[in-house]
Figure 1: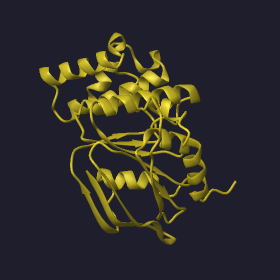
Figure 2: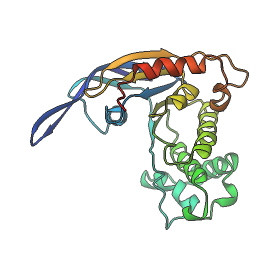
Figure 3: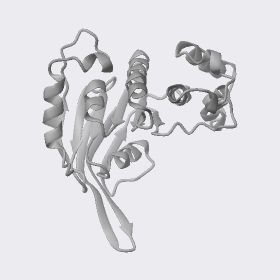
Figure 4: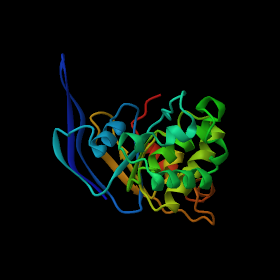
Length: 244
């Protein structure tokens, strides 16, 4: 679904050229969840922007086979629009609001517990519900590939656990492919099939981990109880260039 081959990106500033990403290669297969982690400021979000086509790499090639949906750290709901109006926003921009698309949105709201709140305004619902609304707004556009950029970091810890579990379940149920940028190692292990570990800037791929967890409940919360979970955490922690 996604193939990055020898991607490099240089920023040009008044002071000169800054190398942000250097020779990064990895792929994402259909239905797979791939996590991207690394030190703060190493270029994780930049990689998502390249996959989304918002930035053009200085070198290398990007192949994306499908329509991309982007879910950001902030929900970016408009406070003056109710939840139904917010969820329809992307469709409005594309000129795709019709009887079928409205029915699809209403089905999504019903399925994911927001039907009773569709005429509420964002400040009248919880942070977790706002994030769910943002996800539904993206799913309404029927993307093949979901890009999640620190999508849960604005939430408190308990809500973050619950919503990451919900979002994982929703995306798996609708058979989406996902690339997940996070600074949370535990979140990456719990949600992803593979994890790409980046170095400090300029970002290079230090390692790619295949995640295999033995647990009865293959959900992000259930995975945290797997005996291998701590081993993956310790290994990935060692890979990160983190200086406290």
